Image 1 (spheres, rainbow, N blue to C red):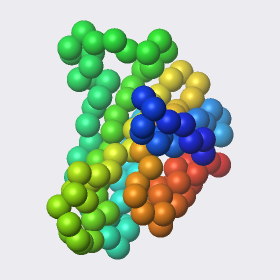
Image 2: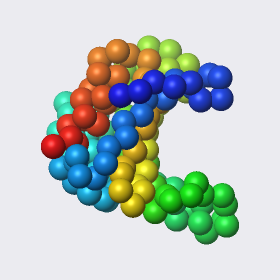
Image 3: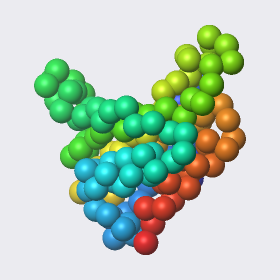
Length: 128
């Protein structure tokens, strides 16, 4: 996975895969795969799927050239609330962006390393 800094402050991890490299080949299949991972995790809790592409299209908003679908799967790993500030970094979201020949998986770096590793493992699990 590649790490970049978005807008000079958000650490974003990206995995770009050609569909030919993947076990699945569409946004909905990736979302279903991730939902299964979330629901089988002992702490994670599935919240929702947000259809970001349809939302933006309905607003007549700008969409990057070539994008044919984009959804966020929203979930939470929060096993405790040690302070009120921790809620500001929850819940988590994984973006699934589909182009004709590839799918891009992206998420913001979570504050706990073990959660970060889990999310990377889920994304890399899409590789054949």
